[in-house]
Length: 311
Image (tube, rainbow, N blue to C red; front, top):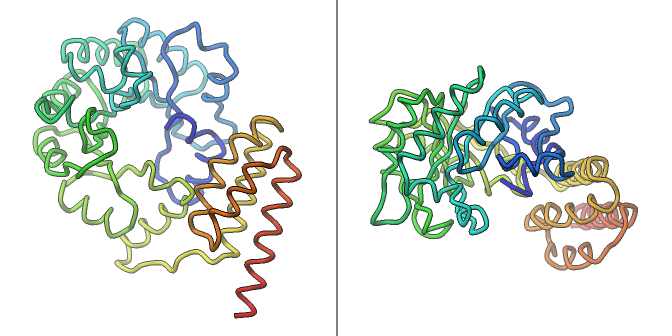
């Protein structure tokens, strides 16, 4: 997820139990590779293997070259994005816009698979719109082209993130191909993860927006699937430690200016779990320095923990 799955967040999610994390979406256009934004998006640090980079583009040879470039930078999996519904991606005939052109999909997949010696995975949606669902067709093309695994968001491009998720469509793909299929879409609790696995027959689930401000969801899902019981919700103390650590990591990764700006959305997502979280977010978003943000967060949890003890 562009703007979300940077190195600090990926590291946190892995520590919380995510089996595989994927970089932010990286443009295949080589003119963008030297920008600071692109360089940060393919930073791996001490991230454990396998390191997966997600590419977005529309030209087979450009995508192949981008795959080779990112493998040279340390990528161990290349993930192709044909699922993003964002206008700025689709207007360039990339992301989920590609689902309208199965022949181009095949050309891109074959070019990338042939270009690198690492596994290539694919993320798609169920189709362009409700009248043009072609996930099964695209899945067969992907398997024939040598794609190692397929993730499916259970909505069409036109649906974006609204409406009921088509888990039945994901199940049809699972029944059609032999490569691993990963189900995605509105999975926000351990019980939902379990139900989606049962309904679709998928090999795994992918958590996207459900992990925003909620990285402990991976630990909760793993525990539920293994032991059939729910973990207690994290305590205020645990949430505070995670938020403070994440804030520190963002400042270290992006620097003062970028860290202050980018941390606002992450802290806002976490604050949804907290008493008076919206009021805190309004104050936090006006702060202009690393030190102010750190002090404000520490003061919040000192206050909340005092109130908790007093109660």
